[in-house]
Image 1 (cartoon, rainbow, N blue to C red):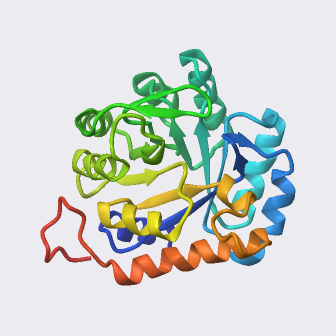
Image 2: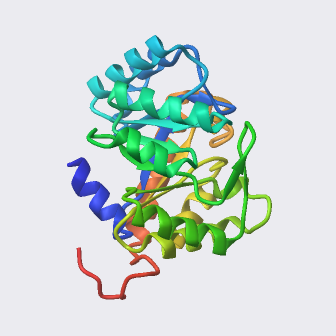
Length: 256
């Protein structure tokens, strides 16, 4: 089922919501409790950062996400090349389904070789923590083409943390660079249904939200984490129903 939904996402027919158990680019300390709390929502995509909790907690968290029936994600936000490579080794050893972020593509792909972990690096010029994204649409498109040539499964785009370009221009550039068959995740600062619709129309397959759930800013009139998650899923489903559009790189009559 997960493969089928990803296939639909790649064709622009479905948007995936990835809930990150993170606040301010760090995994929250009560992440294991949260996996149990959110079970009634039935999320299919759940992730965490490579900072904030111990390796032992990351291992238990990966198991808990899998037990809940969700695809597991770890996003690299470490700021040095050495730390990023170390996080890739952790992801491989944990057996997470998808590793996001980092820019050391050659080294990370070598580390993940032979594992079942798919890799989605950052295009553009990510810096700092919390991460900001430099670079132009041309940079992002070129990076995405390079990622695909090196065997990556897609990219993790920090579109709304851009410092030099319009976020939607970056999403469209990433879509062109990835082509129609690779998975485009938009991460960071997705705080409203309007942004979900905008990135969907621009060609995104999936998006991550963490902080906006925990601080209640996605649905500011509701107080429960579960209510925030249900509203995001409802908006995601609405985009999927109403924006049954081919990606910009596909002909208008592309089939499923």
